Length: 98
Image 1 (cartoon, rainbow, N blue to C red):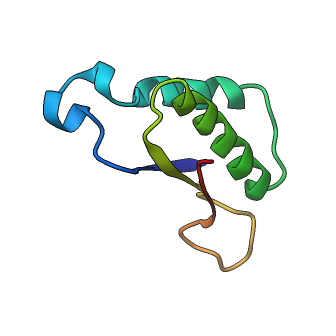
Image 2 (cartoon, one colour):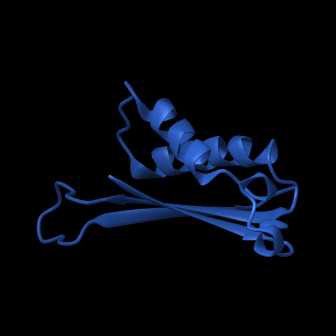
């Protein structure tokens, strides 16, 4: 399984000017939250996993950054058990932050 997380800011985060970790999202913390969430769980569909990971990311960033406009989560199943599918199959869930 592979995840791509895209976070769109409404305007540049302060970190682009300050180069300070405290002025943007902590991507390490987001990754750790995703890892913790997935541990010990089994998912039948990448659609469900993608939606759940979107919610984990949304909760992770809402506490850190109010300047986020949109979050997109792409889940790729690298070796799906589907004949003649090479390179994986993916699902993308994307939504604006309210």
